[in-house]
Length: 199
Length: 199
Image (cartoon, rainbow over all chains, first blue to last red; front, side, top):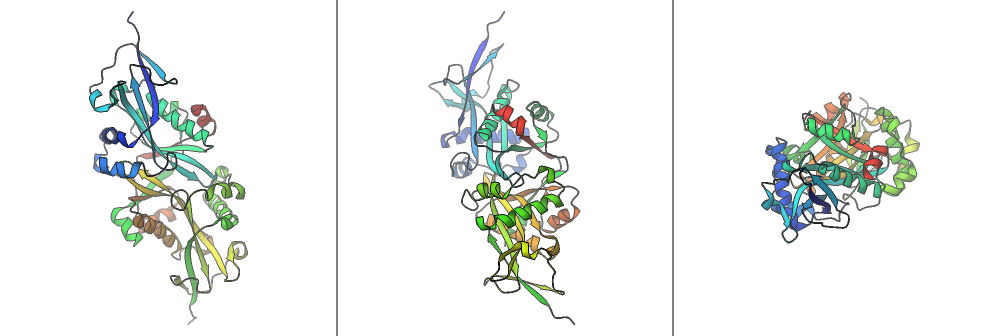
């Protein structure tokens, strides 16, 4: 029998030094979601907007990292049958000394439900890099946001899912989440229409 | 020919003193939307949550008020063919001395689009009391949020609409808004499922 390979994982708040890796994760997510036509973020626009407010009061990013070495006393240990090959490891190294690699992230911001008179969180992105999927990392990220919401006494965690993404739908159902109501549609005002109405 | 009847209108930020009227507007909206089963706000829970942060950095409410008398130099004047009868006028008076009545409101909070690397606003509620509908008040409220978004350099204003509300859909189309994409579905984790995942 092959010996087990272990990965130690932690979740931490992103910092401005993580912007290059956040940019790459976002771009991979846009490609995966067939939404590159809607992608205009740059490292510089992310730097200018992501860290303007205190964590949890505005957009907040949790990064999920792994290392072959223990990182914190509360690391979660993942046992793999086979060693994992990460073709983009160099790109996503966040700490060379300790051999730490970013494998995914979740971004979220506070929302408010007036009918509940409670704040909550809205998840904007949840993404795990391809070679790290189906190992429980997505659950760790979603559960970190749920934990923060419970800690703050918030009522709900919400997000939008595109309806062809069967793996995401299956994953969210396994997490106990549900579709709010199929009758709701998202609307927006942007670019010219926004400028016109805002004149 | 009957003389024209004029109403002067203004939009202002809600204050804690408005909570009784906000509560009533929210409840009327829940009844109108057939969502009373999802309504648990109280005056006290609204007071505790609505004014915790500076306007525009968290949930923010604009109230739309009318008066038979001029209110501010920038009042919008509405000319009506017939005088308007408001059966709930007493309930919604916000300033007895100047004869000011609340006719509607919009609540919204900042969101964030990571693909644009821009903040925006998400509208939670937009409601005009029944006897004041079809007079342009809804447009004034939506346009006040659009104006604030443009002023702050924000990229989008977004909201959810329930698909049986034909009047709302027609109204938003007239405002230049569009459905983001019919493929997106809203999901949530709440109550027991949230607690469980957040443990």
